[in-house]
Length: 552
Image 1 (tube, rainbow, N blue to C red):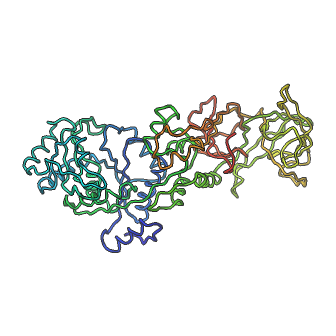
Image 2: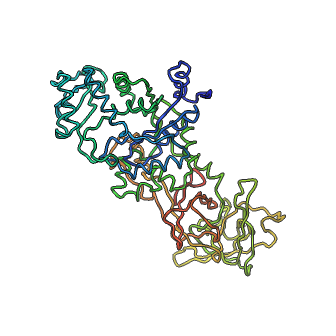
């Protein structure tokens, strides 16, 4: 039974009307990726739409690979797409491939020939392109358009049998060379292509065009609503023509929605592929990329991406979103689940001069939750703090350390800075302080200070590598990649898009793992990177705690 769904976008409004009018009695969608690259955040919107709508209407969504271009496809991409969909929390009904329908596509093409609606054309690709005309001038009909049905059937059969060179002949639909829609000017529906296919080998040497296979596969599969990007709007008349003239009972409906862009983000599989090939990033899962793999490695949670595309809305006009909008959802989800730990990224020694030995303290793991677990740590004489938490000149607006200033050490005591050492260049090499024994955290301390800083006891610490990320593209050239219309070389890579810190320290005995997320107090949200080893853990900063904070 189809549940009553209150429409939240224009696509659901269309579906509701189609169900009310009886055009369809069930909802079926499809997720149709081309296995020629890794999915990126733009594909998340399509995934959320197709799988999400099927769930809402108690329907089904099939995963159907558009594997009609063997020159660009591989099993690697097939496997990665399935993994990405599962990671996002969705499940398909069945898996299909466009190549599953090649025999039926061929039979439909034969039907068009027999009905006098398709012909074999001998024009070269260059000649055919010239004959199509322009937006203001009609095309010129092919001199081969009036071949007999018998001759076309014979030539098409011989094309299938591999008797002609690639590019020497093609099959075209007979529609209208004067149509204002260029896609309707006797479009090519089959080409000769001698390329080994990663899935079906050399079984076929003629390949249907996407404009021919797409509507047929939808209709044959039982798709009710074929949800596509805006680039398919001008192709919709051809989509409908193919279904109508091939005599398929199911009349799938194509619905287009607009693309979503993020300002300064490099999207588009060919753009990302070039970045990898040129060595400007370390792979398709580089945390600076907006591939699903990259975002996942960076530590972004799947629910954040889904909430982002839902909140961005579905419209008919392309949307350019500020990165801060996405970051809001990333921070919000990480804040709910991240374990709070102490880590010092740029260590500066701190000596508590009136302290001897060590003292056990208790730290909360999840202070953001009403129910939290706790862990033990150790306050001691020699500690490490962040270099940025100390300044040499007193400043009453600086609520951290300078000589005479008081701060609380997280989970421990209030300290007063008493002095510092510096080298011949004026660089601070060590800070001295005294602690107040009556100010331990968790006691009835009445002393108030404006600042609290995190710290590390080097006797109970693990040395780690930390990677901090910023925008891959320099801010002044970010405008160039909006809409993905420019060449990859038109923008500049931000030299500070990744900063590696190899001398950072984290609490020991945390038993960190790849599934958990961590808030390094005051430094941001982090996750364990795949480059980690038993001897050295590597952490990626997913995002800073505040929108305005920049990589330093």
